Length: 224
Image 1 (cartoon, rainbow, N blue to C red):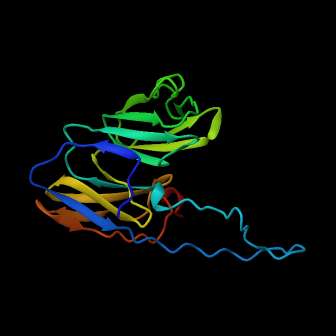
Image 2: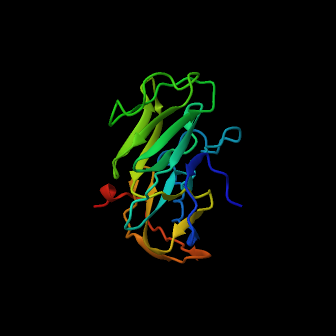
Image 3: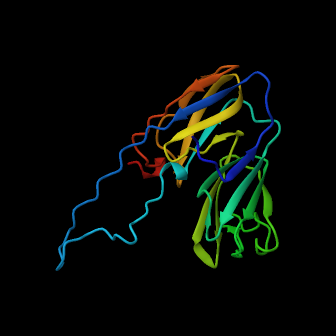
């Protein structure tokens, strides 16, 4: 069962449309390297507070792009949960209204590092949600609180409303895609993955399956 997402994208239903489903084939996590030096005691795992690694799929966004820009940009809701975002990365169609909701009692004043005027000023809680429009495809905004720099989220502006957030197993689903040819791009943490875009032909009814294979999680800038 796919996990419920805390990022909501409202899209109109489309007649004669199909659904893209699939599962990411992710690279194996590297083994923990041996200790470089030894102390008086052997290194052991902490039984009371084990290290919690952040899910790789939880930091990914899958985007399906065609030749035409959606006529009606949807609304994107992004939840702020205490001192972190429900998802560290979200994508918003160009022209969409982005609504950030604070579901906790912790007040934060949010700004975009790349454009200080993007997010309306003032604390997000208890005064209510903050909303703004992301207009330029390709723009990436780092949303943070200057007084809490550990609180960071990435907002990626894309030229499509067909967006998926995989669950922890890598499964994803995007409904109401008009029949036709599309490219599938995958974002991970700080950038688009350095891999060729997948091509997919969406049928006018039923489901089309695509299982992207990912051999490296490095973004293009990290490649040499």
